[in-house]
Each structure stands twice: as structure tokens, then as C-alpha cells.
Amino acid sequence: MPIQIIIASFIILIFSIVIHEVSHGSMAYQLGDETAKRRGRLSLNPFNHIDIVGTVLLPLFLVFIGSSVVIGWAKPVPVNFANLKDEKWGELKVALAGPVANLCVAVVCGLFIRFLPLPESLALILSLAVLYNILLALFNLIPIPPLDGSHILFTFLKDYELKAFLQRFGFFILIFILFLFPSFLESLYHLALALADFMTSGKILI
Image 1: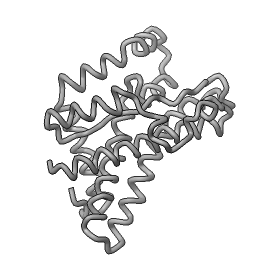
Image 2: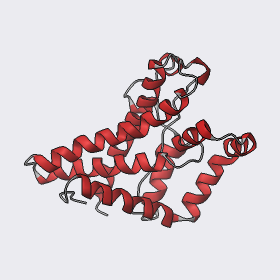
Image 3: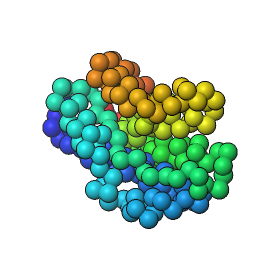
């Protein structure tokens, strides 16, 4: 992969992650929890959201091993679910806010590619934005902590022992899957690529 594409992918990934996390915090704020706002986590400044493992080390490791997929996460936005006005569905709404925001970015960028005459360089950047925002949404829907899919699962899961197990060991399970089963990320990437291609009516440049 050309170094220019790697750098562009990394920058787009960082800002897509920031949008993702700010969306979580904004939804929580709308539902009555000010924790993220008080801690400065509703800012689009990437330095407020960087997680050493998820935002720096994991993407660099994937680049180093030559992976075609660069993925990661930021520091989870702090949310006190007890403060949410919607006690039944509040956690679900907060969890979905991040992936939905990424899909909205992908749709907007996809529409630009599909209907506007763009220079090839800009079309390539927007193509990367479409792909990585779809990939980030899909990745975060995996039902393993600390990803958003776990909060969606916990909304419906009544097995408290399983919930406690996942909360305790979910991070290690996720790292185990990512490092020992790279084909999993490849499959996720190809699914995101297919969705991006469909969204842009075959005009994606990746």
C-alpha cells in the first residue's frame, strides 16, 4: 500500500473515531448525563480522545505487519448510565450513536462521490472516508467489550454471569481475536468494501 494512502487512511481513521466518540457523548448529554461534557470529551480535538493502545499502537502494528486493514478505537467516552432519562433504552441509544454517526458520514461522502464531478485526489480521500467509516461502524457493532456492540447486547442480555464475564475479559478476548485471527479483520474489510462500492454505485477508488 503506498505511503500516501497509509497516511491518509490513518488521518481519516483518527477523525472518524473522534466523530464516533463525540456522538456517544452528545447522545448521553441529550439524555441527561453531563459526564462527557464536564470532562471535555465533546470536543473534536483528537488529543482529547487518544487511547495509546487503540488509537496509536494497534493501527501502527497493523501497518507494520502489512495488513490491508487499519482499524482502532479511542478512549471510551465516560457515561453514567444512571443519569440517563431513558432508563430502558438509554444505554442502547448511546451505544448506537457512534456507529450511526459513522454511517451518516459514509453516506454523505458516498453521495458526493456518486453525484459530483470530483478531482481524482478528492474522490480518493472521500472513498477512504466512506470505507473507513463503514468499517468502524461494523467493527464497533461486535458484541465484545469495550466495543459498542457489547452495550447493545447488554440491553437485552439477562444472563448476568455472562455479562460479568464479558465485562471482565472482553478486552483480552478482542485482542486475542484481532491478533490470532487476522482473517476476521480481512472479512470485515471486504464486507465494508462491498457496502462502500454499493453506496457509491461502483465509483469508489480503492
